[in-house]
Amino acid sequence: MSETTTKGLIVTIDGPSGAGKSTVARMLAKALHYTYIDTGAMYRGVAVAYAKAGKPGDLEGFLKELDIEFDFRGDTSVTLHGEDISGRIREPEISLLASNLSQNRVVREYLWAIQREMGKKGGIVLEGRDTGSVVFPDAEVKFYLDADLSERARRRHLELASKGAAPDSVTVETEMAERDRNDSGRDIAPLVIPEGAVRVDTSGIDAKQVTDIMLRHISGKGRKG
Image 1 (cartoon, helix red, strand yellow):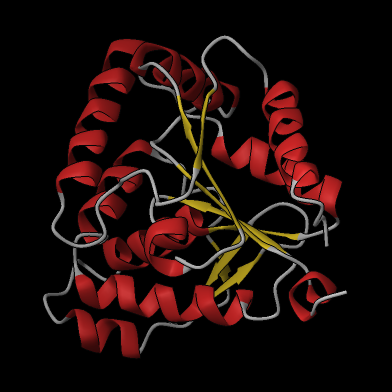
Image 2 (spheres, one colour; image 1 turned 180 degrees about the vertical axis):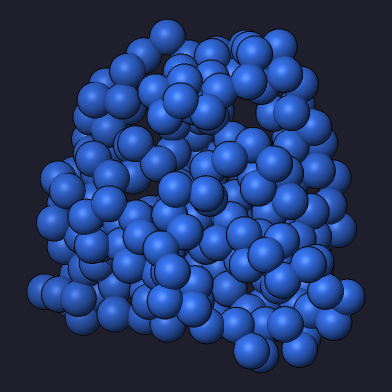
């Protein structure tokens, strides 16, 4: 058995907001007995910290003093200076702020370093917008999930409504379209289909069906870890 197989694979899942990445990544990680890393939560956590700090202009200084912790055991937990901010990271305005901050190389390099450290031993499933294209371009298994904008907006609206924080559905779709433009058009690590990634259209199918498709692909490689 090879060293890579012994330590476990690095599996990346990229795609736009609302494509089902988080749910599927959790299910896939559980099926593989891997650690799930929600990279989007990391950017949103930094966005919450940035907003609470009054949006300082000196990002390097801000990040140097930042005391933020990410715990991906069980439900995603983000702690800022000892305060649990997990509930704030999914708010629509934080999502947009995270998208804007993600266009800054200083912020991205700060989080890339943390993500690579988390994943250096393998046995992980990461999801985000640049996990297979930039963070781990040599990952053994890469996926790209996508779905129609209306479908993605519907899912996000339901998610926010379940937490009692949903704007109207038109606003959700408008903000999601703006997020798409920001993510795909940014100069640094734009959202792309990573080289070698398997594209899965999640429109009209549920998370279990998507996970099964991905597991079959991994099984077909004969390397589950």
